[in-house]
Image (cartoon, rainbow, N blue to C red; front, side, top):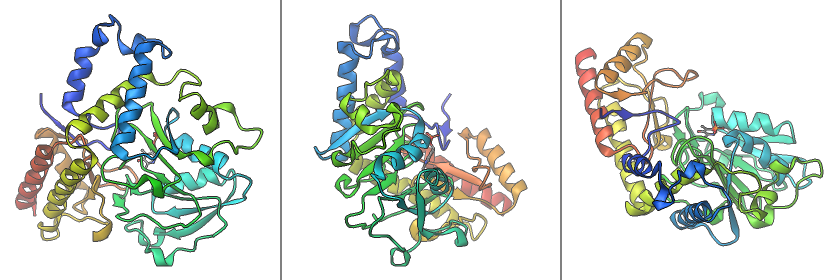
Length: 360
Ligand SMILES: *Cc1c(COP(=O)(O)O)cnc(C)c1O
């Protein structure tokens, strides 16, 4: 049955990738083994791992002086690993507060250091990105952390903060590989895999080498980036099947023109949904400032909870699934990551128009 899955995460995977995984499930490349059954130190899996890393480096243009780590613990564990590893004896770090994920990162960081909230859109109900000329950055901060795409609020930066010598840290969980980024502008990029990469259980960290090796003495071994970097992400048993699946997605991206081509499709997809909202004469409402609307998570509502529920129910009858907004936001949210085909977005935009006609 063909459905279109607009889940915010874990989210839709490319259909071709799932078919390939099925094809290879019991017998990977004539090895007689499933990838799940392989030793992570064996020749086969080491090859899968190395290829996945090489492909990700190529897709994102990761410079040679950065390590790519395949870790566990989700983006959440990075909320603590970042201060542990990047404070390097300093007492404070800068954080930009643009919504729920920023807030969670800040709350965790407060266990380790003074958090300087350099800017916040809380007074605007997190409906926009605070203008850079209003930020109060600290030149001596250990690093500056921000969330380029707020998955729940549907707010996305379309620019990169200039932090000078202060290392820039980005939670790209929901927009990694969806648009081109100059990795050299960042000190550290992290992303849980389950939105735009692969299955849950894998978290990707891209970190500049000079930031490794400065953890306090009491740091648990597993929370030290250098341990993982020195062991090629094989200090302990890595999430092998999730890495394999991520690797298949990287190959799929390369086959489809890489990140630049994906970005163009993502722009077109987002445009269709925001156009459906803007053409509805106010029937649909998007709370996000126009310039800061996310290409990945389109948040909208009819401002009537009963009508929203009806929309979601009727959408499901058309096989447009998982459109319910986050419990903190209400309304609807269409997550349209790389793996969501244009046809799925066209189907949703069509239904939105029709529903507005009928109920507006
Ligand atoms: C989903 C998400 C997280 C949380 O990821 P986990 O892997 O569940 O820890 C953090 N940040 C952002 C921006 C997210 O979208």
